[in-house]
Length: 303
Image (cartoon, rainbow, N blue to C red; front, side, top):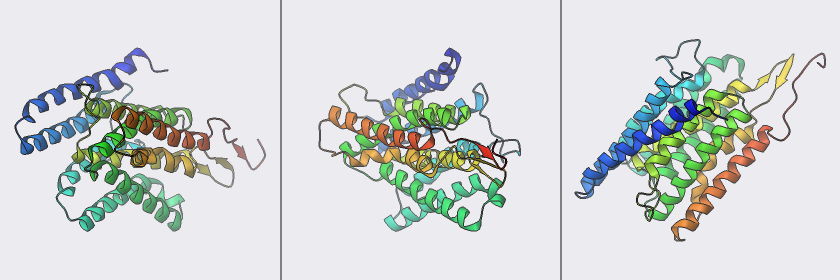
């Protein structure tokens, strides 16, 4: 269980800061469509800025260097992927469909390569290609689920699924991967996304700015790829599989569960179903990762 101090800097302070940004943006967004778009952009910037600041000043520190020092875990790249994804998102929505998907796939592949590059020497060329390719496709899919739907019901469902997926995924990182910093990263992001999307007043739907989709996709998917890359050890002497393929794919894919919910249903029903589906997807990845039956470690001598 997190300590009161960890709850403060992981959840309470980031969420409160985003709520302040939302309040300021709401004063701008009441003046027409252009002002509403500016307000959404302000909220997106707030999500990314608060996420980065919480990681930077948190205790224990999640602060990465730039470029990453050799002592840094590669997953800390995701702190820098968030602002990069936000900048790309500003261009993404103004592009033709084909160019938009090309940008998303290229960004996902680039992020995956930065995660893999420090350990690429111990992987075959096919393994690198498969991991980069799968991460690119999954990043683009999550990005599209958050950015492309214009139906308010669909956006409501994907926002709920994303919040639940981030919170539940953080637990999986801790309990399956035994990596607290990955769990803390997901917890911070779930707090700021939840504060940004929560319905105020309660009669409104959950709503995330479309422009923040790239930032979220480039954190959610590479974070899981980092777990797959660094938690799995396979050698002639020792094997420990703590992050199977099913976990690596299902946990970051959970935001897509919102796309399975009929968008015309009542908001409360839509939110409940989206949350349950996202939990089911994350739970499937967690079980595959060994919460119930941990994979035993062994070496060539049977110890």
